[in-house]
Length: 94
Image 1 (cartoon, rainbow, N blue to C red):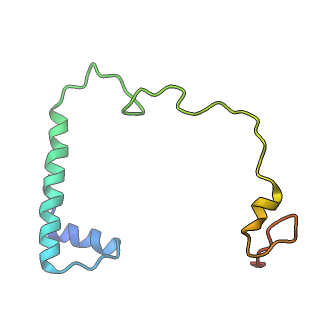
Image 2 (cartoon, one colour):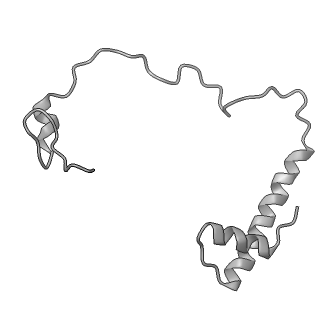
Image 3 (cartoon, one colour):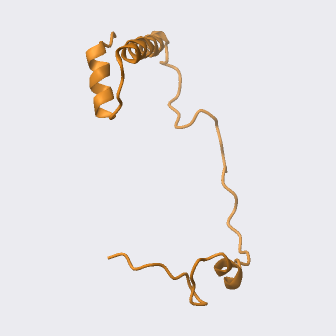
């Protein structure tokens, strides 16, 4: 698959990027190289490869839930710019 400078310019426009002619040419070459490398993946025989949702076989990657004491309210509110002693005070946004 070959990508044209016009297509790269259109993508740059959509991404709100300003590219000069040199940057446009360089990016076109780089994107073409990426597409060539991705196209090589189609040559691989993956008929006996099981589908996966992650590159690493992770099991139980999260810790167990356990009851712990929470941060005391005074410590949590200590760094707040404003509080009423029980909660953070923030400006009304309506």
